[in-house]
Length: 195
Image (cartoon, rainbow, N blue to C red; front, side, top):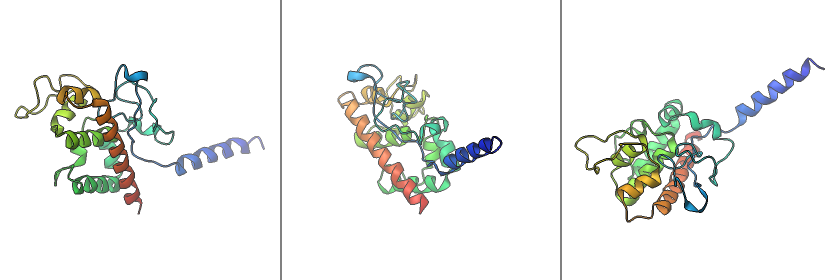
């Protein structure tokens, strides 16, 4: 019986890991209490990762916390069906130009949810995605871009990027809206990719 216990434990762990959903990262809200401090993560708050704000968001869930280490490019490369369905969905909604490779668009983002949320913010507020991407990744935008001076000079949260690029917008509200939209898109694409 003593020899059987480690084998059974290993089998239970393996079964649990193999049956746990392997979803792409999901954005969630959260942040410092009372709206103080860092209001968002790079891109959109996804699993509390990028903005060093922890997993305090309402939508953080245990099944996807392990996926935070995966870049969007890595997630989409490993899950080609998700890549195809999510790209198609974003293009159908007019959020991603035809012929755009989602892996390329999301390159440098901490995770997939942040990238998709930034795509939504770009569409919702008519802010060039290149500017949001530059701020999220801390890389300078292309020299011919219409981004304001200083864009991409350092990594910043989606909320901070919204404040910088569209000062009249309610950054917290816009970030929350885009996060929900991104979450819905990723869920829909995941469901489609499983059929």
